[in-house]
Image 1: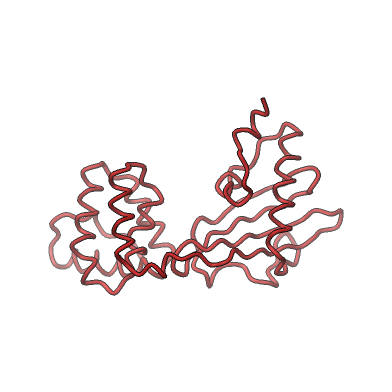
Image 2: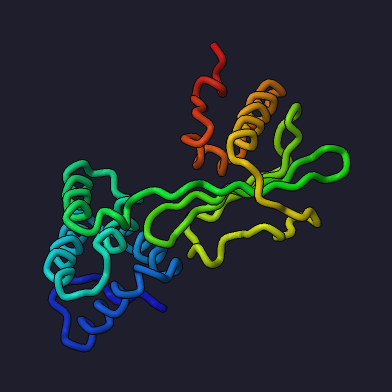
Length: 214
């Protein structure tokens, strides 16, 4: 779905399209990503107008408040606007914001290389996914991530990546092995893939310290 124009004082047709788009934010990952992209490109005054429009329209929508605000919160740095959004989310159904377990999938190639997918719930039925291939004692061949997917589109046991069959695996040993591979990668003087930094919280890793071991 193409995003409508930014909120302001729209005519009824545009207002209907705006509300239809907001309704899609609860189950359409593309719509949520589009909302984040559009909001990120707005000037401060337009961002305030967007939040004003959400405050006005949200009570008339059958959409969890977290679905309306979470995409914007992901790209907002201003503390006042962040506080406003977080307060609005708290007013909604907090169960929509509760975490679910992270899932790990892994497989092994000839020569010992691992291929892993970590599926991390974000909110509602949305997840983000880290994909990577690595040798535990040497580092990473590649890493990439999907920042937002509908859970139904996330990988499951039986997925094939780089010709490797992935199966559900206990999370803790996978995360520990990935953390070990991160250190091995940096000890070889190699730049860490940017996608790993997006998931630094999973590895309990201080990437700045890793990059500058002094």
